Image (cartoon, rainbow, N blue to C red; front, top):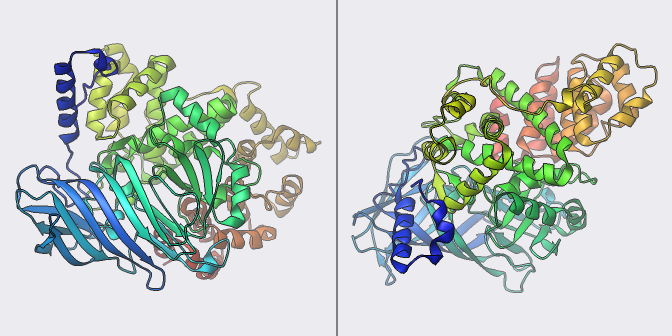
Length: 629
């Protein structure tokens, strides 16, 4: 699988029989599937290859109904194919174009992963049609009433299929190691627009019937649908923004650099292969910063700060078009292959667009986040290995700073060992040779050894692969930029100012706002402040920086954490509004946790949560339900 060599670039110049061999090798590569503990499917027996989806979205019943028509490859000439199912209502399943009805049954229901849908087929079966409706509690679907949207006039629906929720709205083989193309017909109320992770319309039509095509094979977690009062505006010839009409102008202004980001990414690691790159700004209940659905990144409105200070999140979601969408983790135990690579790529894009210092500041925050994660999880826990084991557990639990930041620093350490030009060439080759494939940790390490380390004992000692991938804690050879802390470096200056201010030795406090200007600098300054502060100290800082009134969610999170801890009541109303209006999981859960630490805080947290819960995504409120129970 891993030796799709550099010759691929020149293969078109070779004689025809070599082209045939190349095609054969490519098929063999794609067939090497890894067993996924979070899917019931057995792709080595029978696997899906293409989906024709025909569904209707019913807001009144909060239900999707229709049929999923699967083209399959019955590799083993089996009498059964297995799909993943989570609370779907299956009414009928047929085989072939003539739609001969067949039998099906279910496996035992298992926590987190649902149940197996076992369909009787023949050795000759190539087409399966599954008629179904979704359950009202489908974990992938969030139905919003008009009040929960920006426009307050029409309902809204969006999906979140990652990690294993696609099986709750489409019967599928729900593993990141299984890829397929798809077409879809989606019928919605005729005053709403439907969009998918595919080629998309730019305006509403009068029928409410929309057609979609995804020509590249994707895994099921990248299946996505959104329906709402949505408008579109182009940013340049291949990028644009979808949003509710009242949000659109602000969003287009905020994301004006999208095209530059795409060009910067291509300059690093090769052509963008998905056609258009557009954003959909969702209502605030979206639980993440962004979701990298192909062609159409779903993005939280909380990054619209009005000053373009949070747009590096677009660099992250764009980078997923290579690391994640193009080359995908084979199972959720290999999640770092998606997120660690993407964090590395993101910071390289940001360095190109915003400069080296901004990228280094992000790296500094990343190092702190990794240290905090290791401390919280325990430095001997196997959950802080890069190669994790989440069998029998919810794979969403692996969405943490180990995958993102330990993965990032592993790649950063390889870069330091081999030099940036060599590492860039290696990554470009990795993306090109594994395009539209899914890869396990072990397969990546084989590729790393064969194409970069190449048996070099000195490199092996410098990189220490096993310590990073199969070891706890943070290896001592971690590489990161130290210039910000050097004499005269930006963080060194801010740290000195924070220290002087804390000791009451800063006679001219106006120097703070002169030296601390960018959002990353402000965030760093807040992090350098003492954990215990007086109301007067907080008031003085608030007067200079207006942290309480900030629209930058990174600054809000850092400042509101301090405000709760020190019972700075001036910020109480803003904190409550923030928690009610913002559904981004990792920007609100820390504040609920902080409230629980102070006298009377649990009661206050529950009071706010009672108002906020209807606005949250199921992933968010399920986590907070447990927290506040």
